[in-house]
Image (cartoon, rainbow, N blue to C red):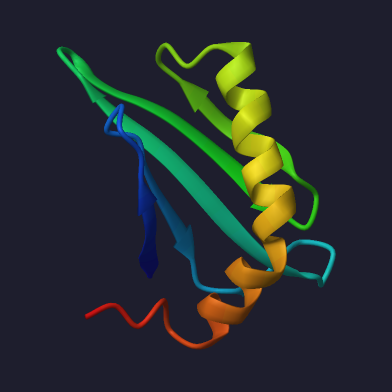
Length: 91
């Protein structure tokens, strides 16, 4: 399951997954950034707790990727909390 987190002014949407058990037995979450384009989507997926980029497709710049990594690092506790609660409770 993927849960919405935020949408930025450039139409990049951020969603995050349920907690799952990774190959090493750790609790993991995927945080996915996606922006529509004329030909499809720009996409980046960063995995917690490693903070590694798992998917990078399209035209996001390296600067944007670094920005996304900082978002994930600064919000990791929230991603784990809300993932375990079934997403953010939005009105």
